Length: 225
Image 1: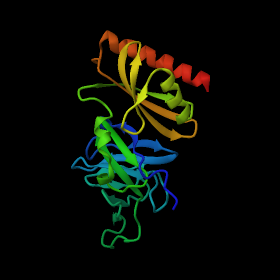
Image 2: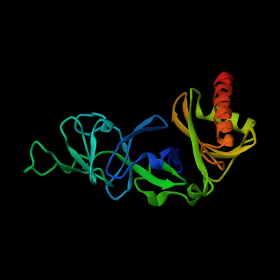
Image 3: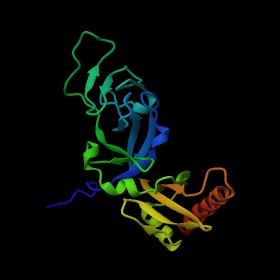
Image 4: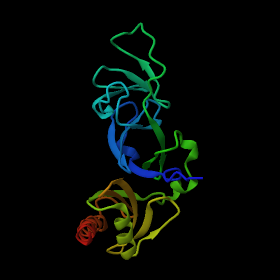
C-alpha cells in the first residue's frame, strides 16, 4: 500500500495573530500549494486552495463575508468549513449548485501559528505535538524568507546546533546565546520560510541581537546553497 507523503504533515504557514475573524485573507504556501487563509466570523481557521472553482480567480482577491468567502470576480460565496457554494449574488433566487465547492484543507491554531495539512479536511487530525512547538509565553521574532529548499535549511539548522522537537518542522536551539525556536515551512521548491520565536521580550537588546543573528543565518544558508 502506498503511503501518502502529506498525510501526517502539518505545516506552520502563518502567524495566528495575522488572521482576523471575519476580516482579512492571507496568502500562503505549503509544498507548492497556493493557499487562501482566513477566519470565519466565529474565529474558526480556514485554509483553502487559492482558486475559486467557478473561474479560478484567486480567493485572496476577494473578501470575507461573516462565515463565507466571496470571490472578487462574480461574487460567488462559499461556506466556511466545507467550501460549499452557498450564494450567487447575480441570481439571488437561484439555488447554488451543490457540485461547486472550494477545495478545503485542514487548519488548526497551535503555539501561535496556523498549521495546515494538505490532506486532512478538519482539525481533528492535528497531533498533540503542535501545541508544544513553541513554549508558552515565548514571543514572535520574525519570518525569514530563504531561497533554498527545506531540507538544506533543516540541515543548516542542525549545523548551528538546533535539534528537532516533536512538532513537525520545529527546531530549538540558540542564536548568539538567545534561545530560539525555528519553525520551518516548505513553501515551494527553493523557497523556505522560517518562523522564529524566542523567550526574550520584544524591543529588548536580546531581541535586537536575535534579529541581527537571524539575518546572518539567512545569508549563511543561502551562500551554502
